[in-house]
Image (cartoon, rainbow, N blue to C red):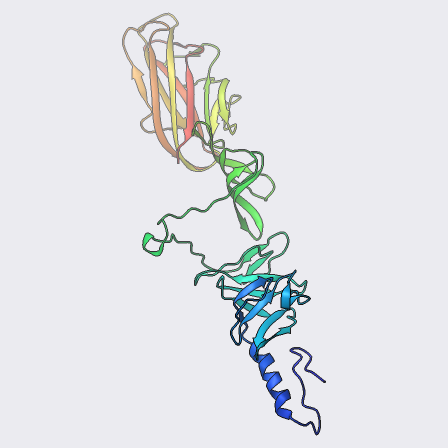
Amino acid sequence: MATTPNLTLPFIAPAQAQKHVTVNEGLSELDAVVQCAVLEMGRAAPPSAPAEGDRYLVAAAPDAAWSGQAGRLASWRNGGWAFSAPRPGWRVYDLATDTLFALGAAGAWTALSGPGAAGEIQNAARFGLGATADAAAPFAARLNTALWTARPVEDGGTGHLHVVCNKPAADRDAGHLFQSGFVTRALAGLFGSNRFRVAVSPDGATFRDALSVDDATGIVDQPRLPRFKAHTNFDNYAALDVWTRIAINVVESNDQGAFDPATNRFVAPAAGLYAFGGSLLHRANVSTTARMRGRLVRNGTVEIPGSLGEISGAHVSLGTALWLQTLTPLAKDDTVELQGLYRAADGYFAATHTTFWGFKIG
């Protein structure tokens, strides 16, 4: 008997007698396989008292009346079992688990949805949302807005929302990459260690940490913050009534190399608000009655407001000190230096304890 190519439904032959038999057989097959919902997936033995129209998907090693029918759709029709061979692409709904399955080209059934209205997608190899996922990015999405919101308690949730990035070992990476034109320009997370890092890159190859948090202590560091501390290693002579740049030539700390000991100046690597300070220790030349002044100067000539200080009276050599500190906005490449001056009598700014420091704060 000739049949249809997909569901193998019987055709009515020319001049065939009892055509209703063939038609009814075809209708019974349609009733069994279309909008297919089975009572159980992978059942090995037939039930003892099936009802008309009951359907099951036969297990891989069936017995009794289902022997030799592995993987087929069994339907109870007119007092007996009829079997249909599922083909790739068929959908079967399992009423026992409230799950929709699809038959793949390799002959395996895959769950398309799971319990509850939300459903499930389990063990999917790739997922593309408005984009094509591939082996390098098995999950890909192309959209303008993404929303993650916590399930509230009244909906059976906890009211909390946690997005987890996990890695198998400390020297691996777990975090977020931010790209422009598919070139990574910033990253945040645990990269190469368990320290939390925020880093930026001009080219996607070289990354500079803007923020680093120690995982053991919680101490925050800004590795790229311009900051320095330096002092002079010799007594700086200052003539009477002459502002003298102090030769701050010994660097103690100099992140980003913004302080130049050769010129005794700090050079701003970026515009912003900076904090500076200095200490001037007096060392007498002849007279101890000198008036000692100090100040911070921008670009060699401009006294920074609020940085001027003076001590008058009889000083104790190597015992009298002047401390200066101020905040000031700087443009990129502006310079700042420490200057000193004596009135009434000349003197020295003593080695080691005459210092200069600064850092960017905003």
